[in-house]
Length: 134
Ligand SMILES: [Zn+2]
Image (cartoon, rainbow, N blue to C red; front, side, top):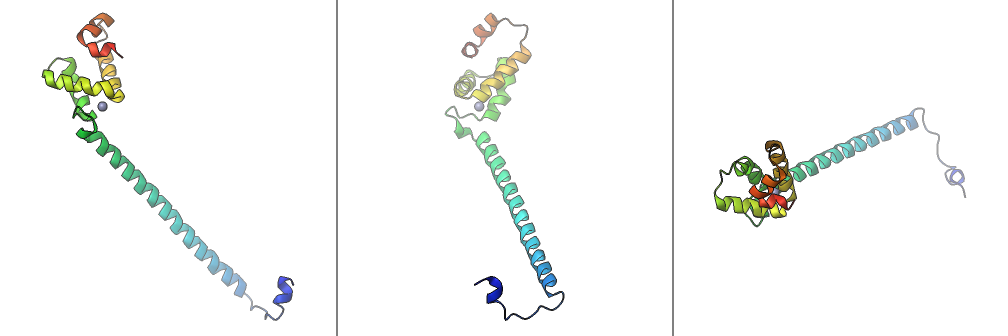
């Protein structure tokens, strides 16, 4: 039995009825689609905000490293570190941090590169033994 045989007894549609139905269905679908788009966009935005926020929190957390220093603090100390303006215990903590944090190590290496181009490799490794390991 085909679709047409089964529905022989159907009455003829009035003019424009199908078109109207199709139009309302299209509108409904458009509405659902736009809501889906908005949902997708807001979910993506929310995930992004959460991700960035979480990343910032993790970066700022001093407990993230056993030395008790956050990467931001270590970065802040870089100038004083190379100017020998820091207390030995801070220097120890920074060096402990640099031992296990590649990002800060890169930052310090870059900083030193920028500020001590006149120094030889010999001076560099003698002043900052930890840098010789890099
Ligand atoms: Zn770090």
